[in-house]
Amino acid sequence: MSQALGKQGVRQTARRAALDAQAKMREQRVAREKRLSARGVEVVVALSERDEVMRRYEQRAGEALLQMTAVEGLSVDEAIQWCGEGLSRRDVARLCALAASDGSAADEERGD
Image (cartoon, rainbow, N blue to C red; front, top):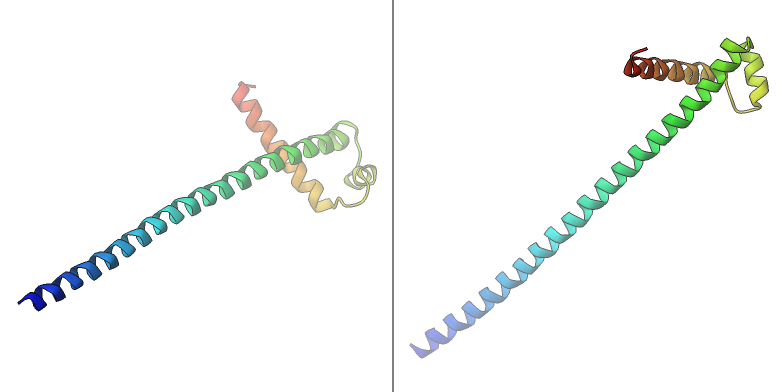
């Protein structure tokens, strides 16, 4: 009987050690998931902030292009020449459309 109790004690000790190791692994996994979740949120927030900044810069560029074409009377090709290389007709159309749509939204917000 003493030998049976000895085996039972060894089994309980081994089981407890395995359960403790598994609990530690679960804790580590939960901590890692929390870190990864926080990093994922950080990435999405940073990209959203970048997108907002880019939208504002592109709106400014579009507003300037609208001034050059609508107010100053330049053609799109002439406006592109004044801006230098790297600006296409497609870029001008997109930027002007962005500025026009954001401008009308701002007018509506002000009640104009």
